[in-house]
Length: 200
Image (cartoon, rainbow, N blue to C red):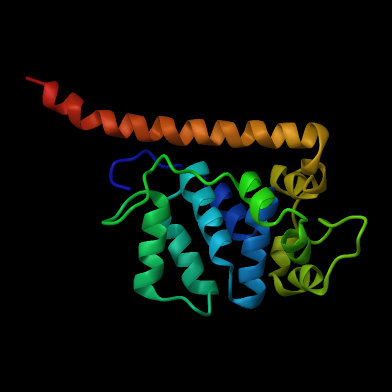
């Protein structure tokens, strides 16, 4: 991403890797990948956009995690895909194209079946599917030993509440803040070369 200001909080990257972002579609995709070694292409773009645009984490951190988890990982194709979503590289999507995970979920998973399949507790009052339960058994034990007051743990517990009422409003505000932060970082980066040219 060149000179773009990127986030450095290691907790954000850890929560993303552990599928604890609190955003249902993002976490469902990451859990699908952890369990199956695959992830739907649409969800890959949303997951990558969340890491690079919302959290402002270098795309190479996501590339490395995908390389560890995907069974269909290809060095060239995946590097190009990550650069495309991040808005850098030779054939990049514009940086200001930011996938909204809730809008994507409404459009491509309107009944919540994909999310409920991979997220334990998402489909309440329906019972969890075997894949959702299997994730708990597959992850490192340390991932389960989180303080319940941890914001990431609380966010995951709030998946169901995001669908309606105050939960939905809070998530919408969170998404808007992330988009504004990403666009501000992009604008600051774009202004640097012109400022340098103006110097005597």
